Amino acid sequence: MTIPKKEFDGLVSINGTKLYVETAGKGEALLFIHAGIGDSRMWNKQYDEFSKTHYVIRCDLRGFGQSKMSSGVFAHHKDIAAILEYLEVEKAIVLGASFGGHVAIDFALTQPELVKKLILVSPALGRYEFESPEMLQFFNKEEEKIKQGDWEAATELNLKMWVDGPQRSAEEVSQNVREQVREMQMNIFSQPEVDVVEEIELAPPAITRLGEIDIPTMVISGNLDVIEFQEISNLLADNIKNVKQIVMSGVAHLPSMEKPDEFNRIVRDFVK
Image (spheres, one colour):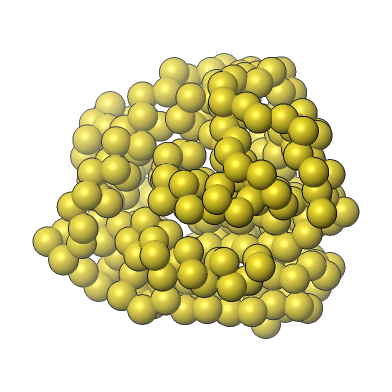
């Protein structure tokens, strides 16, 4: 069992930037990596619950929440490795949602010795191509609103796509969850732009290397999510060696926020 040596809540100098890191609890290390439409606050219900039994770590990836985006070359999975090193954690259960799932997969592929178990929630996947007219239209509209500086409209597009999902109206979704995600997404759009930023992509990309993952893995998705993300979850379940797949009913892209109690039970059964 990993014996954590540090408790922390604040900014850490990591790989040329400052990243927000927060820890709580004692026991086996459990690291949460947030989605691209949120920050570490999306894990509030999990952070409080799992800190009763685990050494819980959550962070803001660079350019999200309280973490800074700096000029230069970077890779999110290398930032994750540096955070664990700073906290003196030798091995962790790693849980990532959406874009955070992408980061978690890359991390597991590059440093499997640091990952005890892998939990992927509505995960993205390196080099997966989104080709449906609905997704391409979403990306084009979002880009248009961002260029216009209309962050509120861009945020609402994201809420409709990721919180509501393609099968529900805004009125059918928890307004509390919508407002939490709205606040986090607006914060992302308001981050200052930084010149000369290059994110290193994993090569070969993760989509061609899923068979290399030999870590106990669980994939969680929502049955109301965008179809491409459901396809990614199925692709992972079909290609990772030691994998368990769970489909939660009545939720879209953010099951941990929509049904936190059910989500926490599923995760606890896997990590115990």
